[in-house]
Image 1 (tube, protein in one colour):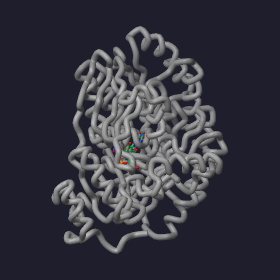
Image 2 (cartoon, protein in one colour; image 1 turned 180 degrees about the vertical axis):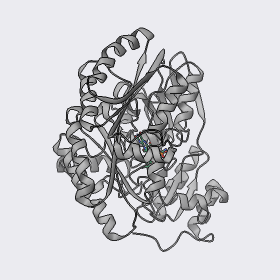
Image 3 (spheres, protein in one colour; image 1 turned 60 degrees about the horizontal axis):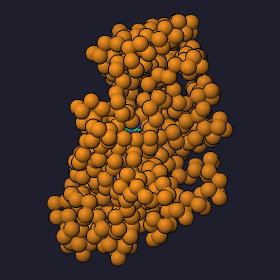
Image 4 (spheres, protein in one colour; image 1 turned 135 degrees about the vertical axis):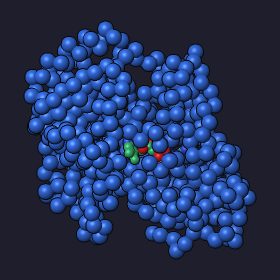
Length: 462
Ligand SMILES: Cc1cc2nc3c(=O)[nH]c(=O)nc-3n(C[C@H](O)[C@H](O)[C@H](O)COP(=O)(O)OP(=O)(O)OC[C@H]3O[C@@H](n4cnc5c(N)ncnc54)[C@H](O)[C@@H]3O)c2cc1C
């Protein structure tokens, strides 16, 4: 449901919000406000206003007004989410935490960082690297997404097969629930017997505003080696994935790209010399020099046995960056070529990955859509773009049908409807495919404890 309009400057709500954060930080008609109508999936919803907090302590007062006046609040980081989580599904005020962007502490001895939620993910990784440490979670959006958004979505990334996802690096947090009181978990409340940190990670801004995060850092690997392989048949790429997993080698990265994804990226990059293959794998080993040599000796013949059209491996930093350009260009290439698009992120056990890829090939024909897929093959996570040019009801229906088809298949293959992008608005109706009514009921009760009046990011997930 869309509101008729944003707040007016003379309305009591506008004035009350402006008193807390300052008039400049309450947006009702500018570019920032319009940006807050969408996240990266571009489903548009009109908020009453978008507010930028400059200190965490402004939140209890905003929460008090929202409760008194009964309007929802929607936490927002950088708006790179892919399931509509940061947009106002009901008349509500989007609250951006992006200006809370300080790295408060880097403790090299304990290998941890204390950060505010608006710090960009790449800045966390860079700050860790500067003191000789490593923050591994690396969503492909890491140059834009905030660490608060990563925690709220439990973001995965390219290195998650070996290093795990955001959840594995969050030691604790502070935040505000809708009672306006400060919640402390984990590192910030070491004696608390229940693991509230785990509950909040991946809750998509529906349980509390996250305002401070303690992150585990680790010792970085000594060196890296990247591999790029192209194939004339997807089956050969799938065979390399299965064989490398079966060999006991654990690559830091194992990314799959189908022929359509590669063709779009090649065109976008203007790399006319490289012929379109049917599949590409990008693999990265990391560890000590001796470990990499050992793993390379296992992988090299295994790749060659599976008919690569072209195969390159390199430890050279600049060349590795070049190979990575292809993978990094897929999302911008899609954005430039398909005005209407939905990105699904189904995930299946790695043994079912070949069946999933086979099905995706048929999906486009079955629903008359452009379809391409790529993703973190190492842990069975496949991103599928369903794309169209015409923005009309019939197109959206076809995308919806294709999406239902794909998500049902993922569950049939013992997988999940979302490997890492969350549920948000777009997958809400499909959650019962994999979650029983009993579990849903318990989840709703948990939500009720944090937000009894359903004013924090309502109509998402539950
Ligand atoms: C090109 C591209 C590549 C991507 N690659 C990946 C990938 O590899 N892996 C992956 O997991 N995701 C990926 N994503 C999705 C997205 O970047 C992640 O979900 C990211 O974690 C969102 O962060 P954000 O700061 O943009 O959050 P937003 O989009 O602003 O918000 C996302 C959700 O988090 C909530 N939220 C945000 N900040 C807070 C806070 N401080 N407190 C409470 N709730 C909050 C919001 O309410 C919303 O529900 C990609 C997106 C794009 C556009």
